Length: 410
Image (tube, rainbow, N blue to C red; front, top):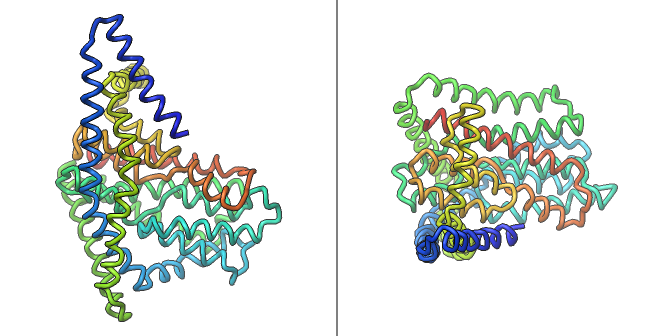
C-alpha cells in the first residue's frame, strides 16, 4: 500500500510538471520540484538528527519506569477489566498477562516493548482459538484496543514538536489524551456491540464511567475558559502532569532499589538506534510529499475540499490542510509521520494546522498495519469484524481531534 502511495506522489507530480511546462508554458516548475526534493531531504536529516536527544531522554526515562515495575502495576490495574471483557481467557492463562503488559507498555509510550508484547499476546490468544484461521472475540478486542492507541505519554510527537521549534512542545498533551480516549471508547463500544458484551457489568462500568467522568470534568472546565487562558492553563497542566510522572518514575525506582541511572543510560542508548530506524522512512515520505506539494497538486486538492465544505456545509475549513495526515494514519505510520512533519514545516509547528496534525497523529494507530502484523503472526485469514471496529475507532479519534483542536487552539 505504502509503495503505491509513494510512487503515486512522485509520478503524479512529474506528470503535473510536464502539463504545466508543455501546456501552460511554465518551465520553472521543474526547478521548483528539484528544489523541493533537495530541501525535503535536508529537512528530513535535520529533524531526524534533532530527534536523537529527545528520544534518548524519553526512552531513558521509560526504561526507568519499566525497571521500577510501573508496567506491572498497570498490569494489575487493567487485569480485572480484561477478564470481564474476555471471559473465555482463564484467569491464570499467559495470554491475560501478555495482553495487560502490552496495553500498559502502550500507555507509557514504550513502542519498542509494546510490539513484541502484542505479538506474544496474540500468539497466546491463538492457543485458545477454536478456529485458528479466524480471529476470536478476544483477539479482535485486543487488536482494537491496540489500534485505538491509548497513550499517556506521546513521546515521539513531543520530540518532533521540540525539534521543529515549538514554544511549548507538550501543549498538545491534553488534546491528544482526550482524542485518543474518544477513539478507544468508540472502538470498545463497537466491539461490545458485535460481541454482545454486558456493558452493565459493575467492573466494566466502573472503568468506563471513571475514565469518562474524569475527562468530562476536564472538558467542562476548559470549555468555560477563553482561548488564551485555556492555552496557558492546559499547557501548565500538561507540564505539571508530565514532570510529576517523571518524578514518580524516579521515586518508585528509589523505593524499589533500582539503579535508575543505569536504567536511564541503557534506555537512552536506544535513542540513536530509533532515530536511525525512523530516518529512511521519514526521508522517503518527506521527499515524495515535498515534490507533490511543489507541483501544486496537494494545494489544489485541499482547495477543492475546502471549497466543497465551505460552500455546501458552511464549515470552518482550517482543518482541511491536516486531513492528509489523518487519512494516511490508518494505512501507514511512516506515511502519516511524513505528512505531519511536512504540515508542521509548511504551516508552522505552533499553527492551528501544526497542532492539529500532532493531535491526529497521537489519536489513532495504523489499523491496517496492526491487522497485518498481529494477525499475520499467527496465521489468521478471516479478521471478521476487526477491521470495522478498528476503523470506527479511527474515525472517532480523527473527528475528536478536529473538534478538540478547535476548542483548544481555535
